[in-house]
Length: 500
Figure 1 (cartoon, rainbow, N blue to C red):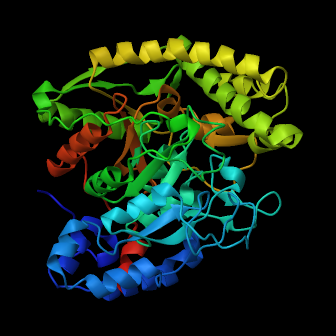
Figure 2: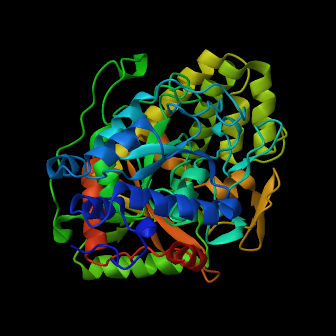
């Protein structure tokens, strides 16, 4: 099996690989944690991905004591691996940031159910990641007010560029060797976009297979789109994490358990992949298109059945409108008048600011009869789910760009971003492609496929059928093992910091 080069510093190797070194006695938990703490000291002042860390948790101490037991280490494939959690869910012994709005909140007595389940792998929740206020931005910028003043998380590959958001702190921490595994949440691309921008692997889960209890905004207000997501430097770590975090929490949106499809390994020649180079009339830039063409060639050489796919303008417009509409129809009423002003501030909007469908959906469903709006949007979503099912009757997976371009340069104003020399509304330039997986209720694997001419990561998103999360990751792992996608590469200065 192809794995990352063993001579890579410990903090940049996959978690499962380092855990095997601990299990064999070649390294100790203390060795590994010391290396990670040193890396944090070296790179976090520049990247600003973490807002808190603590390697002396009760779980860490327990794993240090038990590491000499081979049976124990083999039962936990991520034994002792440091993990980072987005600051919108409670983590025991860490302050509650109230989703990035409070700097020194009360110390959480108990971790959210999904964080507790992650510990089944042996991974230790020992860091909190930066996030935008209320997790509501396509970047990871936290100013006071309306946030707690945590500052901006920078892209590890170029500190002048965005890490995307809202899980940008998690993605940047994993990409820069400060954490082996990351847990974020996505409502409209908040996992897919940072994974693309920071050049790491990620999985955005199918809805309702893992608990969202404790997450803000609450899973009850965005239950159709809010899902957890995992970040790592190798897809095998994602598979290990996925196997642990499944489970219900008895909240209304999880009254019935949903089980993942059983893994059925597919030969490339039996795997049908549709490739969309854009969405509607929006296409990716030259760098992304070039790398996507190279990927298509490699997939074809491996025997995959690859063909072009086009969502079409009408479907794209409906995806954007319903996505923006559901977000505001569900979250807006829970935030009242303040929420309406906040959404307009967040998106840099005025009533006539843009005719883009996402903005129209966002604005037209903030007020009025929210229940009527919601029901109308759900009917429109049903139409999109029918189109989704038709798509997956034709393909096993659909690949498309995660964003129009590599990460743009900071600072970004609240209204526009320049992409390929064109000034676009910020949510278009950053998030036009990222909303699709959440709205359609499908798992999404984020895969780094190369770098732009400026050296910034570029990734694609691979959509799978609902509940096919494990099969999706199995296919991605096959692609990595066959070198169909390039080996993960850290930024040069991150590598130098880890090796020093």
